Structures are given as structure tokens and as C-alpha cells.
Length: 249
Image: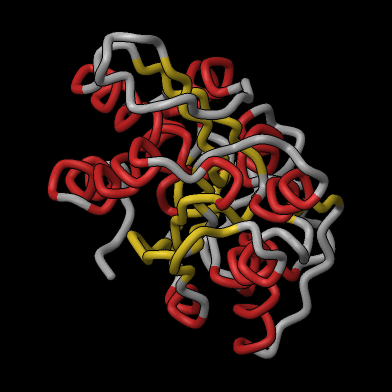
């Protein structure tokens, strides 16, 4: 799965709504809105789901969780929503967009991503506060940005990033291309990026552990949507998520 982020992103674009379980041999499309950090794991889970559900196509829309909620609030059609934090799922629930109760299925923590060879010699979270370091983070409304702020506050440090992005993949892209000296992304993003970046763990990351919830959406509620949620939370989905670097709950 290493290095699969770019290819999976291209695969991920699309929207639609489910039109049945396809048990009668007809075609169905299941639309899943999911946080960017789930690209690699959900792409694999989606292919497995299609294999076990002939006639079903899983279409993904990956973006920052806050952007996805905004799209859903504006009426975008989707069947399942997987958020990178509880706060954005709560927005969806408060807006009566969710059918039933969301289910937590994974957790994730931040890691420092640097370009290969680490030209700025970053070795700790404190190094990110150096004014000469070109730091890129997620915007505060995005889960990875909220986590970065929480870690900084707990550590008593102030971060002055040169840019704030709308998803972890945007942060990772700037680091991989050398536009930034460092970025704060998830452990899973560093793992998926392979040799395009290096990851630097830091103990302060334990101050912000993101829990990921998933839910069937009210407008697309169907047995097929629930089956996808069950796939994610079941043994095979959990194996895929673990292999992608997500931590157990």
C-alpha cells in the first residue's frame, strides 16, 4: 500500500446514491464520503466490498471532514460518511443527516512528515516552532489541524505555519514536493507515502488521538449502506485499517 496516495486519490472522485442491494442482479452505486486519511484503507475495503457484492460499485469522495460535512449540509447525495473526528460527525448528526448512531472504527495520531533526507534537520516537535522552518499544517476546522492545535497547546508551544491546508493529503503533497520543511499529518499518511517523505514520531502526539466514526446517512439509508459500515467495522475491514497504520480503539 505504500506510495498509493496519489493513485487512490484519482480513483476516489465521484458522487451518487445507492439504489438497492443489487441482490436481484441489477447495478447499484454506493457513495461513501470519507476523510482524506482513509484513502488507502477505504479504497482496498471498497474493492473487497464490490467483489462480495456483484453489480455494486462503491464511489468514494475523499476530502477534509469539515468540507465533506459542508457538502452534505448543502444536499450532496451520499450513503455513508466516515469522519476523522467526532466533532464533524456531531455536525452531521445535529443536522439530521445521519440514520441511527455513528460507530467508532479506528484511531489515529499525528506524526511529523519531512522531505527525504530531512534538509531542515527536524528531530522534535519543538523544532517546528523555529521561525526559519517552513511548516505546513491543516486548517483548524480540519481534524488534523485541530489535533495540531491541541498538541501545541498541551506542549506550551506556538506554531506559525506558512500555510494551512484543507486536508492531510494537501499537507503531505507540499512536504513531498519540497515546498515545506515539515508538515503535521497522520501516522497513516506517512506510511502510505512510502519513500516520498520521512516520518518523525514525537511523544506530544499522544495529547491528541483522533477517533474515527462512521455512519449511514439518512438520505441514502439502505441495507447496502449498513453492510458497508459492517464491512469497515468487521474483522477484514479492521485488518485493512491496522495494516494502513490505524490504531485499535
